[in-house]
Length: 328
Image 1 (spheres, rainbow, N blue to C red):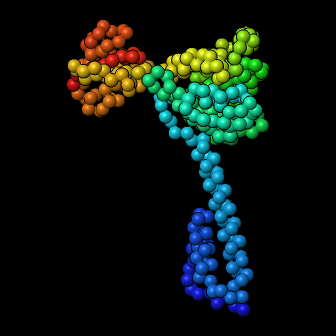
Image 2 (image 1 turned 180 degrees about the horizontal axis):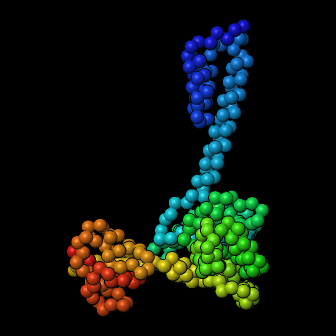
Image 3 (image 1 turned 30 degrees about the vertical axis):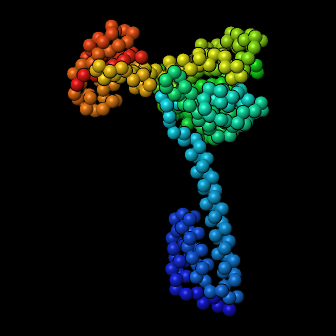
C-alpha cells in the first residue's frame, strides 16, 4: 500500500535534512510522524522515523552529559583568590577542603571519592579565598580539562599524606603537572626560552600530621627533599596548623586589604578593598570609582608605616590594613 504522504510532510523532511542540531532534527522528525497518515502503508516508514528520533535523543543526551562534564571544570571565581588542591588518591584533599571551608565534598578513608571539582570558600580574617577539591591525580587517566582549570588558578596546593610515602607522592604529582607544562613559579628560570609553560606558586601541605609519630614522619620527609619547597604540616582531623595555611595562602596571593572612611566618620572595617601588593593611592581611588581617580586631590592614611592621619599624594604606596580617607 502506498504511503500517500501530504506536502507538509516533505516540508518537514526538508527541515530534518537541513537540521544543524539533534534538537532541530528531533523536532522535524516528530512533525513528520504527526503528519504521516495512519495505515499499513506507513508502518515501515513510521518505525524508521522512530528509530531516527531515538538515535538523535541518545546523541542529545550524550551531548548534555559532555556539557555538564565540561562545565564542572569551569569553576567561577569567588573571593580574593583561587587555590586548586591537587594530590594522589587518599591524601585527604576532600577532608581538608571540608574542614577549611563551607564545602561538603564526599569524604571517606578510601581513594577516588572525588569525581568532579568541588569549590568552597575559606575565611581568612575578613576576606574569603576559594579552595577547589579535585579528583585524584594519577598517571592512569586524568580529564584534560583538569589541567586547564589548574592553569587558571592563582595557587597550586599539593597535598601529600605524611604517613604514606609523601616524597613519592610529591614527585609523581609534580611530574604529571610538568608533563602538562605546569611548573612552580620559583623554578621558571630553568625553563627560559621554552614556550607554552604556566608558572604558578606552589605550596606543599603534608596532611595527616595527627600525632607525635606523624611529626617524626614529617621531619624525615622534609630532610629527604632535595629542593626547598614551601611546606606546611597539617591535620585535617585536628585542625593543626590551619592558621599557618591560611596566612601562607594570603601571603602567597600578594594582596593587601585597605579600608576607607569618610571625613569625620568611623572607618568601615567590614568590607576591605583588596588590591595587589605595591598598589598606590590612585589604584584605590580608581577601584572605588573612576571619578575618584580624576578628582582626587590628596588622602589621609592611618596605618603601620604612617602617623595617624598623615596626608599623602596619589603615588603613595599602600600597606595591608591601611585606613584611607580620600579628599576630592
